[in-house]
Image 1: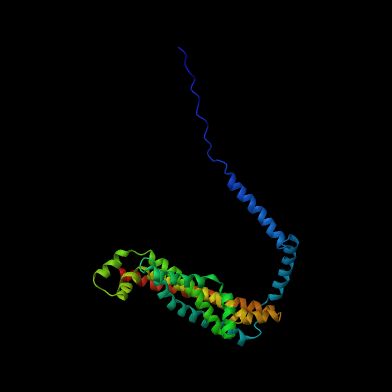
Image 2 (image 1 turned 90 degrees about the vertical axis):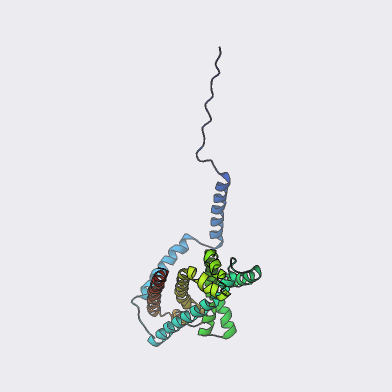
Length: 273
């Protein structure tokens, strides 16, 4: 009686070779080298830049406030631009974000609202500031309008997404009581998104504080104009003083944002209990 030998199963490969993935990585590496050659990114230029940067930093220290009035005016204007743009942007974002929520609104309302949000998110605030400078002239008004557009794009999108993630049981319960639409929003929607909305608003204020220093470079008011003028005059010690003041302003804004979040979120928890 003959017995047939049982062949052992072929060994399984734990990690199969993905040639498409390797080809993609090789193509990416080739493109990086090609892009660096096109943009003239060389090691010699990098080393030269380190030397120039060291000279620049040496001229920046110690910081010296050459024009205190100009510095104070620029910082005050940046704060005013940030707060006004945040307040107006948030107020306008509330209805736009509500109309963009697909779980509450019909298609004919969500598409225009989402188109407005996408348009506001398309361009950087500096580019929008250049457009408004051409439209309304130099000054803080152009900066406020530019940051309002940026606020609508950010707050409107996140607010709409937060509404789309809510539980509709609470909304249906308010509707079943015969409440009008605004009462449904006030008692069925807002309590579920209020904590996140406070976080969005405080983050946008912090972002507008930073952006208010940039839009001034193109003439839209704020400390950015003072900074750009100091660069043009080669007053690098004054540049350092301005940068330190901007850092202090941003840190103060972050502390304020944390305090606001803490107060409102703790109050919301107490109300829920």
